Length: 188
Image (cartoon, rainbow, N blue to C red; front, side, top):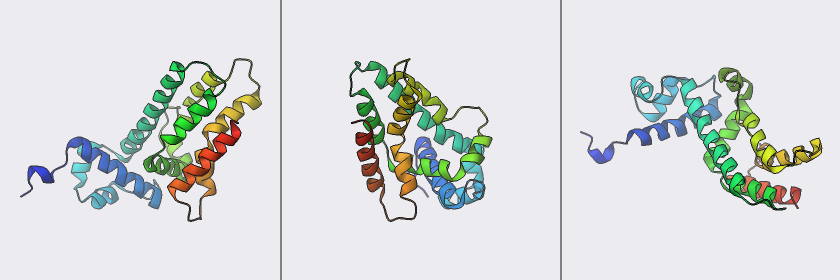
């Protein structure tokens, strides 16, 4: 009989489902992963999985909701900062420094399954389009397209480093170190 200590809370179970599903989506692809695969990997029944998430789509939506929260926090942080010449660098480094291995895995998921997931999540909004708020806060209204691109690039160094690291033995720490160096070079 399971003791109280053996049981996970609902929040812990949801977090574990998200972690395992993300790993499977990366390994097998979104379309190649079934809810049965997820429940089996977790050692729970499909009905227990459905108690927390009614579908695979709900799992992916939950993963993206977390990313959107992080983005909203960054927007609020930028708004609270005094205008300064180094605000772009500080904001971009803050974004990189908040990158966890789970966030890297989420980026891998989007890189590998982007078209399918964009079609699936037909609400029309994705983190990239929502990121325009950050760009708008960091460049003046009369900024050139090149200025706007530079801001986007300063924040996209993690994605670039992640793509460059494919088929290498680079660790997550290596990816983040390269991204940090690239952002400093871009915002110097």
